Length: 392
Image 1 (cartoon, rainbow, N blue to C red):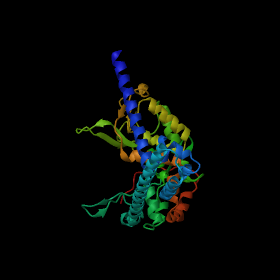
Image 2: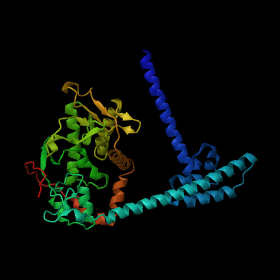
Image 3: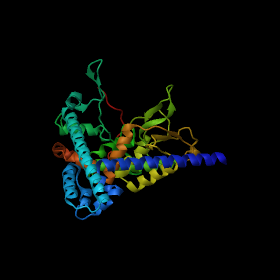
Image 4: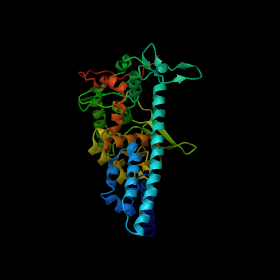
């Protein structure tokens, strides 16, 4: 039909435009920082006298120095013919511009490093410590000028990152770590730490920065939570990956709702929303646990049309579909949330570059001094009744 052909033509046109946009962006980056990769300068790149290929592996902070050396070699080398001399002059000009851009980029990155370091050093976690319970409060009530009585008290939680950092900075006592709840549940015969909402986020987000060591309590639960997510998705007949996310319900302003969705059998808190919402970022967080299954699941999501102009959409909501049709009927939540995209990018960076984000975090001496906390071994399984978040 004509309508179908028109739709296909529109999609093909969109793909061409997006591909051209990305190619233009790549060329712009090459022109600004690495002009020796440009096709018109291929002769200089392959010239053994210039040795430009050594720039391929130079660290950014050393790039200006090596560009200076390359410029000197270009000036020293003889260029036969007017055309070659004009090309050499243009190459020299672009090298000078690339050096200026590299110096500016290095300065900006160093400012960011100093700013981030200052934020971390100046954040006083002791302010948030409940002195009686020796746990970190969930917040400070500005109007009533006191800490909220409820505390973060679970090890299977994103908040363990804050507890670990606070202990490393000596803002709070090490005892706080051992007061975090370690209640377990059995999933297919394997003990897994219980979390508040049963989300992938609670189990996996801290591993973006913090290492998980083999045969430890945290690693066992991290791997167990991914297996639980996979089995849950399989039982429902949908792609796996559930965490807090937006869902298809819109408010009066046309804004998507947001809720902490999770696996009910891993959650201490009973969900107030009966829904089945799958979020791609929850799968991306699993790259460090089961990369093969993660990639297969992402390809499945792509085939279902969950990929948009800025990456995978926020989520797919199966809540209104009949159970027998879950696998085919869903509403795509067509938005992107910055913090979910950011976590995905960090997970991809760790996966593609040998856990580099974790290496940066653990290169900090204060982290190394506290690293032993992460080596906690699992103990024999003891059944514990689920409890609600303690207060007061």
